[in-house]
Image (cartoon, rainbow, N blue to C red; front, side, top):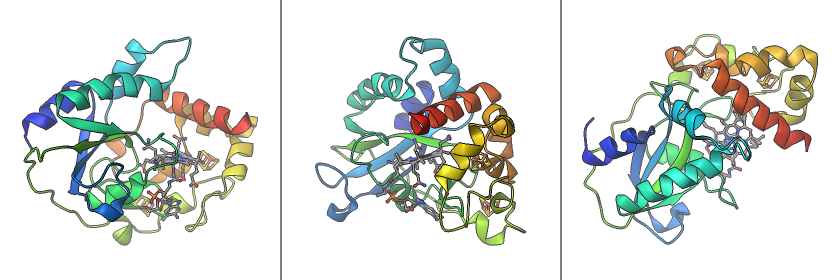
Length: 217
Ligand code: B12
Ligand code: SF4
Ligand code: SF4
């Protein structure tokens, strides 16, 4: 799909995932308007972050703000972030935007990128930028044979209804959790959708360390 807004977003290393016309009840700060979700899928964003990151801080969130705020401003939009507090409902917005479905892991599953994507911002537009209609795709989990994501975790952290964070963190803090730390969550890796977009080890290790650090502080 082509549009000048998408071209500008992709030139910065991000992907436009989906968009929706928000209503007052959608918890979009400062009211209704068109909301476009952008994030990372494929190597573009992390490659750029790895080049530009400040080793003293090494914060992906700070880097995203520094890159996305001016991008949003240039597009006549305001950037909202998944790390804003209190959390904005990005996963609910993803479903409204038609760019995925709730997987049994709780993560959004995208029809092309599977579980290998994350949201970096929502661009809330002051004036409608005239994006093409968003096409919706079927839920891949509904036809998934055996749902391997639910049985791949060595400590059964995913029940299908919840995610036992403490069991996961205990495992990845032990030597038995080295595989998850070096190559990524086994449950995510078990999913057949979007396998070609699996994060490379450098990106996986960066996220796993950030996650473990946040839970062991
Ligand atoms: C708090 C948080 C966490 C917490 C707690 C998560 C939890 N399961 O309770 C911790 C720190 C543990 C965590 C961990 C991770 N997180 Co997290 N997290 C968030 C954060 C900041 C807020 C979530 C929240 O509280 N929302 C509040 C409510 C109001 O939002 P909502 O969209 O309306 O609610 C939806 C969710 O609650 C979802 N949901 C939550 N749990 C479950 C469980 C099941 C079974 C289902 C079906 C749905 C579901 O259902 C709602 C409707 O869809 C979001 C960013 C954001 N702003 O959304 C990232 C976010 C959800 N996390 C993300 C990721 C990638 C991870 C990790 C994989 C990190 C890593 N290691 O790389 C892990 C594993 C997460 C997992 N399997 O659940 C991504 C998910 C991307 C995607 N593809 O969906 C997000 C969106 C951030 C981003 N930048 O994209 N996370
Ligand atoms: S393994 Fe199957 S059920 Fe699990 S997230 Fe992937 S498609 Fe959905
Ligand atoms: S990172 Fe490892 S321990 Fe944690 S949920 Fe994924 S597979 Fe389980």
